[in-house]
Image (cartoon, rainbow, N blue to C red):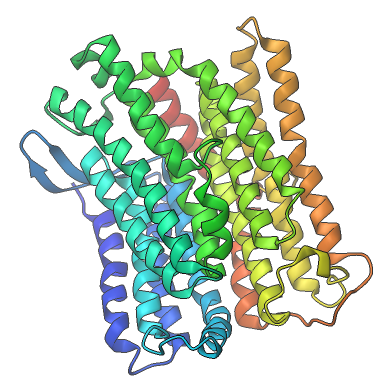
Amino acid sequence: MSYLISYTILAPILVAALSLPLSRMMGPRPLSIINGASLTLPGLLSVYAILTGGLPINDGPVLVIDNMGTFSFLLDGINIAVVLGVAIVTAFVAVYSVPYMEHRFKEMEHEGIDKKVLDWGIYFFMYTLFSIAMVGVATATNLIWFYIWLELTLIPSFLLIAFYGYGDRAKIAILYLLWTHLGALVFLIGAFLFGLNAGTFDFYALGSALKGLGESVVSPSLAWLIAVLLLIGLFVKLAVFGVHIWLPYAHAEAPTPISALLSPNLIGLAGYAIIRIVYVLFPTTFSVLQPYLLAIAIITVAYGGLLTFYQTDFKRFLAYSSVSQMGYILLGLASMTPLGFIGALLHYYTHAIGKALLFMSAGVIITEGEGLRDLRKMGGFAGKMPYTSSLALLGFMHLSGLPPTIGLFSKFFILAGLIGWLSTTNFFIPAVVLTFLAVGLTPAYSFITMKRVFFGKAKMEIKEGTALLIVPMVIIAVAGVLAFLIPSGLLTPLFQDLEALMG
């Protein structure tokens, strides 16, 4: 057993702690580089493992507790796209944070905010803890271990919204805290019902997934209850239709660097967890729930997509787009096929890259346009902001599944897996028609908004963002294009491990 994953998680935690005293000795730029560099470590480990064929990496155990199981970390084909997506976005948004938060700190000074809060050490301490906790969630192999890391994402993100957000930030932060904590609590109840009956909370042990363990230790009725509790808890985190209420407020009013983590990275982790936990422990029950998952997925894609057309705030538009994109992940999961699961996990990476670029583009407009967020006041920015407009276009292309972005592959696999399953059902035609109608909303709202913001008649003067805003966006964009040009790096381990898992 190695401890490579543990070290890549521990290092950013130590850097986060050191940020508090270091902020008194250095400026925000070196602080952002140190924190960003530490956050690249899980990504570098992932790339190394792909290039050397070193997957899976079974790390630990960090801790073993009787009747609770083994607390360890795992990096394999199933979570490699997730870990890479988190590492790439969080590392380079850390650098992007400096010019954006300088602008936000000045705004807050004019608002009369206590200067003790406007501290770079506090900001990067919470930012890096939030970021690396997501890697902990993605690599945990035990339900309690998973829950601990999930809660560790919640606390710093709540404080970042409460301290540095917009509008009624304290109220919005509490709304975010209550909704997402409620989801985590429902998940925890399901986890305890499973663990107390199974004698362990592990869902991966001894080098393999514990497939069907939940259904082998409890009655069918209790298996149904536990699976539904786990799903509801994760649905809140995924922000599917009906339990999405918190997302448009939290993601729109968070400081934009945090929006670029919340929306692309945090919510999609629940989709990964549905495969890793609910499907693994309760595969038969999961198959019974397929039609319900499909219905919720189609409604989520359509609802989020339709609501984007009614938004006048750029960030709120992007938040509703995220609701819709989580529906795509759920479409892949509902197929319960290797292709659909591959598409869902690949779409995590697609959405991470694409939505990060879009939130960061919105942030450039906010900093250079004196807080501008109103879509009705935008237009004609492409000539004045060529780099931002090009990167935003690439972000929309990711969401729409157009080359040269990895979104082409994720959308293809989701739809291929879904059609493969639907072809065996008696509701093939209506389900396919509804799915494609819902899916068609993404390119529609993407390119209508692209036109509204960057083309047409210029309504105001604005200039291009600084290098510290643009360069991190370029690096993130390159990561998306490279995944399209060399898809085998992600697809080969995904195919191998999901085929082994699903038999």
